[in-house]
Image 1: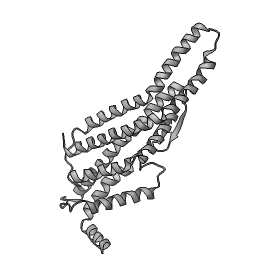
Image 2: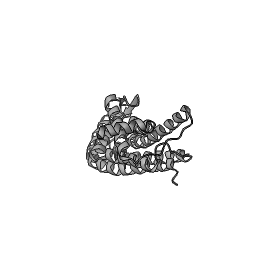
Image 3: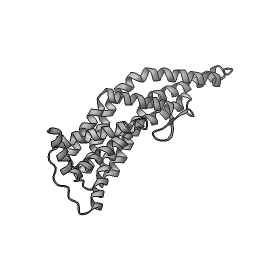
Image 4: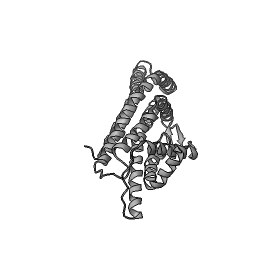
Length: 265
């Protein structure tokens, strides 16, 4: 009986369900967490449908969606997808900071030209950046970040119901602010390696002055690689702890982006 009642409700409110589906789908498909190339399309579709059905049953009875034509309904669909994509954009920004840090670290330890192919973005990414990105992804799911992200999505549906999007003139400024914040965080991740590289260069400069016969190319490059990997290994626990703080910043950014759509100053 409960399943039949849900089906009847879906048929009566099909336009609302489709709008809800598009907002959830915009977030899931565009997110670097769930929309990765390696995730099967069946899994993405199942997750989107499951979340949409869950939110459909939890949310209160919606007001009728008002639109004058099929074009008007399509415009509302586009706006709902835009909300989901904008929220996913914030998560993408904060996960991409690992590539900024990885590029800086690779240049310090002598791996500046060593890249790996990224199927997600169809481009070359730094090796250490890929390692950091995968580590951050594991920490995200281990810390329950996906549940918190879904809870924020549910909050957006409560505070900004489907079909009620207002103008968001400040979205560009918010995106620029979040971009600068994520870039600075990426530099902070790479700071230990950058500092050690500068100290190592200083030591090599002193050695060249004291022992001119020593070939710094033969000694210096392997030393930079070994010391760089030792510091990377030592920084793993710190990076995991940093990741938990990073997620707090990321969720604040998601809420800030949502507030822009909701018209909250």
